[in-house]
Length: 424
Image 1 (tube, rainbow, N blue to C red):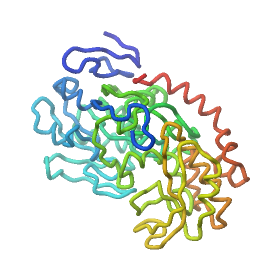
Image 2 (image 1 turned 120 degrees about the vertical axis):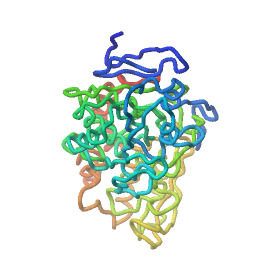
Image 3 (image 1 turned 120 degrees about the horizontal axis):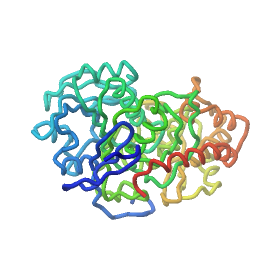
Image 4 (image 1 turned 90 degrees about the horizontal axis):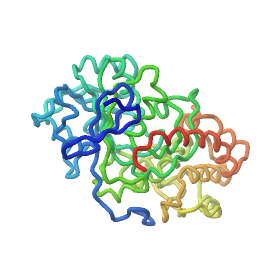
C-alpha cells in the first residue's frame, strides 16, 4: 500500500492503527491547578507501549539505536532500554544521550559523553551539540540500522529535546538510517500554538526552525512537520508510533502516566505549564528560579519588592495570580542571596496563556524595578526568535502591543501546524 506523506495505515494485531508514515517510508505500524479537560481520566498508552504490545514488529530484523533519557519509561517506570535490551524480539545495540545524558546525570548545558552503560553494557553515544555530518558519523560508527526516538517534551520551542529530534532526523538521513519516533503527550496539552514564531536568522539549539514559542504539538507531530517542511530536500525514512487514548485537551495529569523530570529544572508537570513564558527570564538579569524547588514559577532579583506583584496582578491576566515572594537560590543567579520577586499561581490552566503572561512579567519588571537589564549577549532574542520582543519592550510597548506584533506570523504557523496533527 502506498501512503501519502501524512497517511495513517491501520494494521492488525494488538496495536491497531500503530504508526503514521511520513516521507520516504513505505511501511507503517501502527488536571492540576484549576482542573481542566480530562482531569482525573487515565489510560493513555505511549508510542512505546503500543510498539511493545505489537511485538516490536516495526523494528524486526533491524539493529536499533535509541535516543532517550530518563523520561523514556513504561507505565510502571521501567526504562524502555532496560525493557528492550533482554527481549529477543528486538535488537537494541546502541543508545544515544541528549543534553543531561541518557541516565540524566548532567545539569543544564551538560551531557554524559561516550561510555558503556553499566546496567546493560550497551555503548552510549553523546548527541549533545552535535548535528549534521558530525552526528551522522556517530550514527554510522554505532552500526545501527534504525534510530528510535523516545523523549518526553515540555511543549516549548526552546526546550532542546525537540531540536535533538530535528538534528537526529537530519543526521539519520545523511547516514542512510531509518528513523522511528515513539510519541508521548505534550504535558501542557495540544490545544493551540502560542507566541512568536522564530525568524530563521536567529536559529540556534534553543530554536532551529520557524515554529511558535509554545508549539502545541507532540514530538511525533513535530517530526512529521520537520520532515516535510524543513527537511524536504533530504527527508529521512520516518515512521511515528502514535499514542492511544490521548486527546488534544489533555494536560499531563489526565494521562495516568508517571511524570519523570525531563531535566533537573523541570521537576513537575506544573513547571512545564509556565515554562514557555517564564523561561524568557533566562534572557534577563533576574533569577528564573533555578536553584529553588520551584524553577520558572519563582522569579526575582535583589532590590525587587511588592510593587512588581502589584503591577502584574493589576493586569488581571486570565488563569493566574502572582504572590510577592522572597527566596534564596542554592545555585545559578543570586546563589545563596535572598531576592525579592513573584511566584506564579495558576488557578485555571485552560484560560492561562503562558507566553502572554511571560511578556506581561517582563514589561512590568522593567517598569517597576530600575535594575532590570537584558543579558549582555541578547539571549532573549534567541529565546523569542527575533529582536522584536526586546526592542518593543525597550521602546515602552505594553503587553498587548508586543503580543499583537506576532499575530500574523502565528496565524501562518497555525495553518501549517494543522496539517500534521495526529490527534483531533
